[in-house]
Length: 332
Image 1 (cartoon, rainbow, N blue to C red):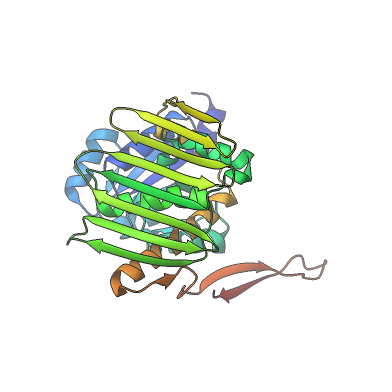
Image 2 (cartoon, rainbow, N blue to C red):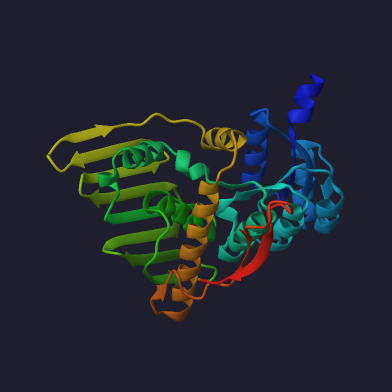
């Protein structure tokens, strides 16, 4: 490999190790834009698996990796350490790559705040948005805003942790409906949680989200809009898109499939954007409202009770002195 190519690689450290972190690292390295340099996890068993899979240096003392390893980007796959790790990595100028399924609302807020304060690149990794049919739906809405649903129903099931399924469902909702300002009524069942439901009322729109631990994987996204109705269904056997326009035209087809991790890694390698920060903030607000409502039994506002965040606000400054910055506490 030539010297220029080596210098262009972004050295990637990984915090937290499981199958999703492995898939993300493999896909990011396959783009040719990243090279793994270290893995940190509090679990010795997880590090044994990481060492076998990658051959990289492994750190059970996560702070040691964050402080001493040489890296340009940090892949965050553990919400337990995400707040602290985001701050340390961003203060060193490292890009933050967050696995959306692995981050609760507090972790997402912390990563967002660190990226904003230190002005580091940020990416929210959501391979679920590349599942068959989902890119078609997002593209259709982007081309014609009349397809933006006034009613949206998202169901996510599978043999995974229900928390991950719920976060995946939130990723779909935020990608389709944007940052939601509204009221959330949520409920959950089981200890640990086996199912969760949330009904959202937002400016005349109605959104229903369901997540359930189940034997087989299923994603079902249905919606109704001024332009018509749609359904995207993905299960272990097939994917199907069905569309009925308001003028009666009907379309039904099986969408092309591609590897979700490869598609998402390619997007991230091409460069992060402010859109990911906005998506992260929208996901954090919705997740937080769902958790508060499920715990209290009462409806909760997505804009309620947000913790203040630190933001760098550009100042005018005198030309001779250059631009000034003010560190300001911003609440919602």
